[in-house]
Amino acid sequence: MALRILILGASYGSLLASKLLMAGHRATLVCTSSTADLINREGTVVRFPLKGQVDPVAVASGELPGQLDACTPEQADPSRYDLVVLGMQESQYGQQGVRQLLARVAKARKPALAIMNMPPLPYLQRIPALRVEALETCFTEPAIWAGFDPVLVTLASPDPQAFRPADQPKNVLQVGLPTNFKAAPFGSAAATALLRRLERDIEDARFHGGEIPVKLKLHDSLFVPLAKWPMLMTGNYRCIEADGMVPIQQAVHGDLQRSREIYQWVCTLCERLGAQPGDLVPFDKYAQAAASLKKPSSAARALFGGAEHIERVDSLVQRIARQLAMRHPAIDEIVALVDARLAVNRAGQPEELEAA
Image (cartoon, rainbow, N blue to C red; front, side):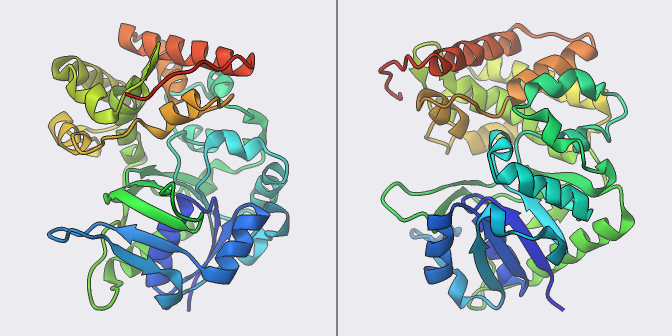
């Protein structure tokens, strides 16, 4: 029998939705009214790059065996679903409508899988080494997570890179780097078994007889999603400079030795929390992938686009490091740059800056 999955966020969330539909499951995307109308009328299209093929393959939801629909946050009833996927930016969960939906998810006691760079507070509560209350200031609206049972919240590292093409409608997504979602288990055996089933179903799914990249990989370790932190601190947040932003490729390869030093320091931090070396990604593998990322990170683009809130994984890493008596000047510099730019944005004094 097909599972029903509620996905908060129709942009990045449509990537996982396509894989679920390919496996025959039912997905509902939560988004704005106009985007929901578009998706309900025309479905979604996700473009996947394939090895040895110049043009990406366009996977239209209408061609897949599963069923897709979309709704607004006010219309979503989480009690009707088997799993909830949190696919929005952390700062969006405090918005009117979304905040109330999140409370209904917690009350319904549905397993929640976050595909976010910023790990939800209930997931962090599962890491014994952390004093989570001291990390709440890193979150836009920490109170919205209070109703969740940590046993029913887990995290998948959002490693696949995807974006909405500027010249396309909002139901089209382009995958840039087709890596896998690496998920930690739930604290509940039943919820983990549900994820295991989805992992198998996505692995077996085919599109027109062919295999499409981006899988869901469930790991035994709680710490596997932390593998994204060294990548974010070495690449994504270092796109942010005092006078503008640079592509991830330049941030990483502009000074490869410095990048390696930062990356290894964050890996050490993750290991101090409980991660094993095998839970993390070697620097050389990451650097190879970063060489193809020719755009600034989404965090940098949002920041220099005037955003008053972005996901603060930089601040989270800094504060966790303090709990472990660790410090690195590059992390402090990143946090200071983000703080300064957010202060400018919140003061309503945007500056004319160009992307490198």
